[in-house]
Every structure is written in C-alpha cells, then in structure tokens.
Image (cartoon, rainbow, N blue to C red; front, side, top):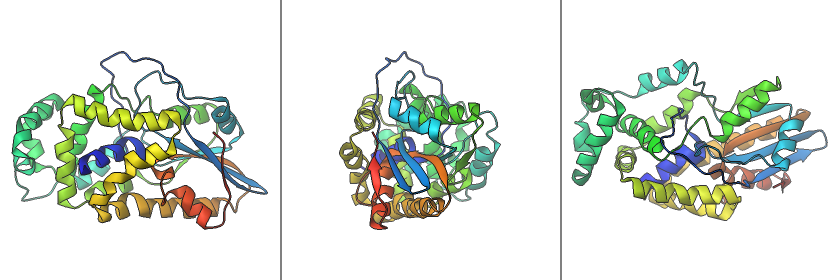
Length: 298
C-alpha cells in the first residue's frame, strides 16, 4: 500500500524527524546492520544504512562500525535536525505546509477513518481548525509523529543522532546531503493522491502500524538487504512519480556527491536510510555501474 511506503520513507529512507518520548519500556536487542565501503588509493568512504527512528536501547554498535567511526575524518548524514534549535525545520514546515482553498481535512480521508483522524488530532494538542488549513502531507506529518511515539520510537534513539554525538565528541565535522527545507519539499511535491494515502496511514490502528514497522526493523537489524529492498521498494509499483522524486533522483544526487568526494583524500562515513542502499536503483548499484568497487564490510 502506498501509505505503508510513505511511512517507511519517514523512518528508513529519511525525512527530517523530531524526537519523541517513548511511553513504554523496550528490550535491548542486538542489531547487526549492513555497512559498506567504496575506496580508491587515497580515499575511503563508508556507507552505512541507517534507521532514523528506533525503540530505545537497541545495541547496534559493532566492532566494524566502531572501526569505521574511529577511522573516519568526518560524518555526512542526509540532513541535520537540531532538536535543541529546530528553527530551520520549523521554518521549512511553516513555509510549505499551508494553502488557501483546501477542503476540510475530514474530507481528505476515507470516511471510515474519520473517527481515527479526530482521535489522532486530539492527541497532538494543536487546535482542531489548524488541520483544515494544512496541506494534506503536513497534517499527516504531524499525525505520524503521534503514531511513532505510541510505537515507542524515538528520533533521539535513531542511528544518526548517536553517530552525530560520537563525531561531535571527537571534534570531527558533520555535514549533510540535503537541507531540512529540501527534505520537507519532497513531501510538498507529492501528488495529492499520495498525500491522502499518507494521511490514511497516519491514523491507522496501532496493531497495523506495529506490523509494518516490525517488518522493516527486522530487515535492518539483521542486515538483510533483500528484506529491506522488498519491504521498502515493493510499494513504488503504485507510483512511478513518487519513486522518481523520493528515491531515484536522490540516489543519483548522492552517488554523484560520493564520486566527487572520492577525488579528495581522506576517510568519511556517510549514513543514509537503509532503503537508499537496497534494491537495483540504490546508491550502491549506481556506484557499481559507474565502475567503482563497493565492498560489504558488515
């Protein structure tokens, strides 16, 4: 289903997300996510497939990942969301999230889901009329934050946040491939049909949301790229336009960025959502087609 893809895109492929508190205790399972490197005689780039939202206490730091962190001169992530100073993200949302003449938000969701919509809106603490003025993607974005929170997921427990803290503590620079505004802009460019699918998914019952996320999380924790590709990419069959905007164009941009980075000596770690490193049009496959040798480290 389209809305399932869009939720995976938020958690696994990467759209700026805030930190939410977890209302439930979580176990401390051990993850073994995938890690690759692409290199030439004087440059090494580690490519780490991440998950942006995690239950707390996941143990994913392995010797191979620790070695990559220690040997890297810098870190590059998809985008930098500063929870302490979120004004850039807030400005991006406020710039794009409203339009004149929109139908009421209740008219943009399946009738059977309207009670779920009203219940979800009530949990946000935002005034109910505000949602009628939001573009559909923006309303869904806010409601998905509530849904992720109820699943016990935290942006603060996500891989990128942990990596950023490690590199910052070591005094190493941290860069980004996209700005907050660029990432939010991907939502804004989606066709209305896709935005409404996301809204329907943002209010779905907890047991459905849990099943979808568990499937995705299993692929990431085991480093099973085939599972990641299957769970993440299969939904694109419903929308070639979405695939082009949200995946293919970004993967192409990032592979070109990596090619340029390989012209400079040194070692860096690039951490992007695991969905971008899985499947036939992944960043890895684009690099291979460009003649670069990509080696799986973990």
